[in-house]
Length: 173
Image 1 (tube, rainbow, N blue to C red):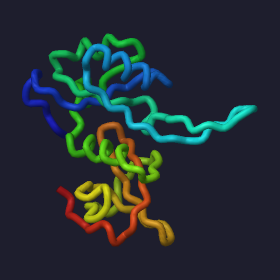
Image 2: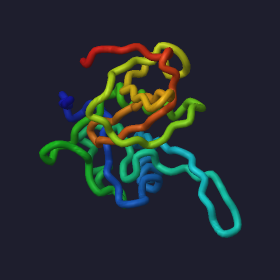
Image 3: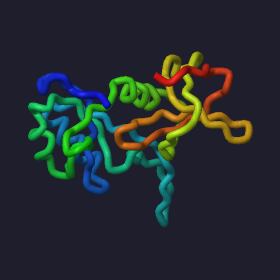
């Protein structure tokens, strides 16, 4: 667990939102000049008369917000915010490395999808390609390898296909 040393230092936190309010919450927080991050994944949606790619939250019910705990009321008073995710009623910061890994993934053209959080698996670091330096869990299924990037606090993850030669095993820190 990562503890916030002072209430004035900004850290990334997870905001739990009401169902299907992720985008609205992020938009309202941005108008209040609060830094937000809402990773999305595009999927095809079909209606009676057409098909269209639509961006859905990668982690439904959650968005990431960077602020100091002194400003928590400015975040909690936004319509659609249910709570801050934490332990024993206290908001828990998300490690910067986990946010940075998901942000880097979102900036690539790689295909990625939500993935169930895994407690076991090999810790790896990407050594080639657009995700060089990113650490995650490697899964193998048949001949396809997948890298899982996790946000431990909310037990959510994203998965991206990756060539096994592009990763190296690293010990758990």
